[in-house]
Image (cartoon, rainbow, N blue to C red; front, top):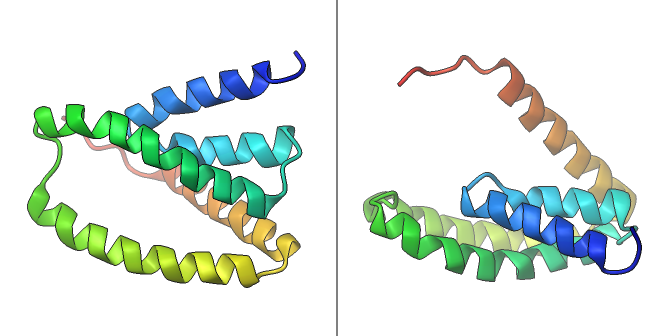
Length: 122
């Protein structure tokens, strides 16, 4: 596949995952940096822009189905906004190689946590 088709497919798949709340943006970031040759800083900016419409599209369904606890969401949003501003400032100040290694380390930690986390029954 060449041209825009792989990016279109990656966006569609990660959009579906984002709708499920799985973190499709993280997978989109991996696609952009590992397969599409996009620089880490640029991919992170694209990922942030990607997140806004995908979150806005999924949010009404999650609210309608009662999956948003506003009492928990409000403080999380406030802390997230503050943390995002600080992290964006830090990420743009870091050398790209260090930023890539930090992101890779983050993915490894999260992946290992998911692999070895005890499963909770329903």
